Amino acid sequence: MLTEPYMQRALLIALLLGPLCGFLGVFVTARRMAFFSDTVAHSALAGVAMGLALGWDPSWPMLGVSLVVALLILWLKEKTELLTDTIMALLMSGFMAAGVVGFSLLKGFRAELHRYLFGDILSVGPAEVWLALGIFVVVNLVLFTRLSALTLLTVQEDLAHVSGLSVRGLNFAFVILLTLVVAISIRLLGIILVTSLLVIPPATARNLASNLRQEILLSLLVGVVGGVGGVLLSYQFDLPCGPTIVLTCVALFLISLTFDQIRRALQRPVQS
Image: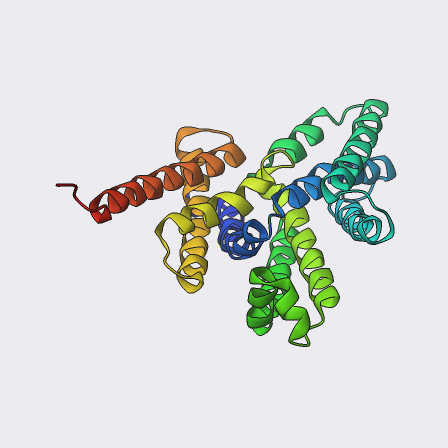
């Protein structure tokens, strides 16, 4: 199994993107941005259709459309009085509808549509592994160098502004990093499931952690175990890879929830 090149590439992608999504997901969930990542992922379908129509590798148009959508969310939030969730729902609906229409005009790309909707990590090539490695290095470098500022921004944005931090610049950088990770992770889980890898690992870690440092480390661990474990289980039992990764993460969440409930029960004072 491990001697086959496609499995080696799939495991490398899972090792890179699993913990990366887990790390980034701690701040995504704390800042209530899960719907943002969902919007970017679903809107990327328009980029996939564009790439196939032009005869290009869909990864690059998909990434470009994802960045356009992310910037449009920020611009409309600043320039209009619309609520953020309204803006995201509007853009997601419009771009995903454009993608569906684009696919309806294309012939013979049903398999490609299924691949991007539900993920196909077993079909990734060497170029995508290198791209994932580059995203992994860049995002982790930025997160670790700006971890204190990002933590303060997440916990208390007003205090971050008073402390002299460039709140607008940090928000912009975080949105760009999140968009890059979401766009690349679509090949891992697919458009429909990609948000799960940003949400489930930090949710699992929160059941067990007592501080932010522990939450980050546990979320990284859950991302690794969920990603790699899902790939191995999908190969072993001939299951679709993306959903298997999600279900592996869900199983870890349920285990953590059980431990959390047991811990709470033990800490509850005994009534006389």
